[in-house]
Length: 552
Image (spheres, rainbow, N blue to C red):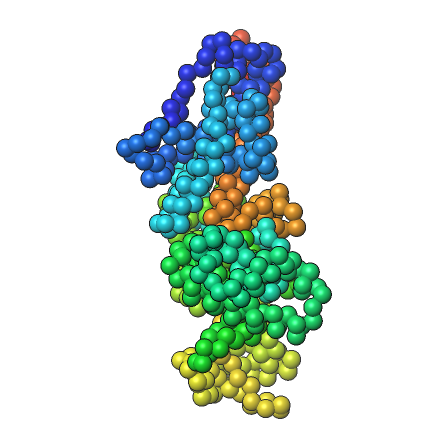
């Protein structure tokens, strides 16, 4: 049964935390600018609990625990990098943490660990079933309220992405197949195993006892290939024997078999060449959502996180969108959803976007035709030839010799609809496609940008650093895309809160200095006033200002 949380609980006169504190402790506990009060005000109180109503049964069962409390606990866990046991310990005995969650009385009960885990499980099952991300709705609702309260300018944005490794070991091909097979077979009971032949059961028994890492270490390449072939035949038999099995482990085994093997026309099982295996294939049976990506010297089996934030010079900047995808998803796929989401959160049309060259694509150029996109770099080395499309055709400038050449249309490539151009050089014909023309145009545009514009994207890299600060070796604690998404949203909500607290401190300090200057001016003129009438007038003004100044 779903029931909303009382966001304004009554403080117990004798059991409330303020009743046992005094002096500086009570002052700090009651300080509205302290982080725990700001967290409760700008995060917990903005959580829309009605979106979580779909997770609970409307007809039977006891009332749910406080949704705001559970979500707040999830955010604090990622904010401070606590383990689950540390989280519950802090929530039980840390007065500031309890205050941040709205637990003002010492006898206010905390949900049990099982309630916390069941809540996260329900979120995952709902997202897996419907495709709706409830945590995304929560993030947007909270951030939208913060944008309106602090008048955040969302017309300029900047974005960047980062690769994050999943909490898995680097498995070889042999280990992936064998671990997946063993995980499924361990779920079979005696009756189900009786459907296998005696020979297959004996082979399976030996494989379950095997330590695949040691086998890979001790065997030659040919020996591993031979073992993979025999295992593939066994997996094919198991997959066809248990077609009525609907478990996730069976579905994963079918997926791994399809990725690693192929069935020839004569029903022969063949091991796929490595070149035919995609980067989004299963990297580990413990995290089937993760994918492989190779970027420079960095090899990642995990995910890619894209962060979008406002980029104003004269106001508070907040993270407005978070996207978590598999590591093999290119940055070009993030631009459109990030801009649409930012527009939804801020209620303002994006006019300027600061990004690097990895986000450039023809589709994004078309989508951003009304947006000034400032690229701070282009992938790849600059070409020797500068390409400029004119009404008369393509003009090619050799940057080494300064020679300008009129290019001619060349024959299109097979299965391609794009035009390409050709020039004759001493070493033969040189061809240019639409991608090269776009890259050359972007490089010319970049040269026309000011240094201030090109440097404006840099601050988002600091945001990426803050996001991944608790990580070790760029690997998260979690497995599965859903858990990575929840982690990213929680971290970004905390980063936004820290920015709000710092912004309010800077604003108060600026107001304090301004008022101090005014006080000095009033005091100066008070001393200069020789006429009794003006002296009284300045004294009155100074007294009124002093009272106003002391309020701050």
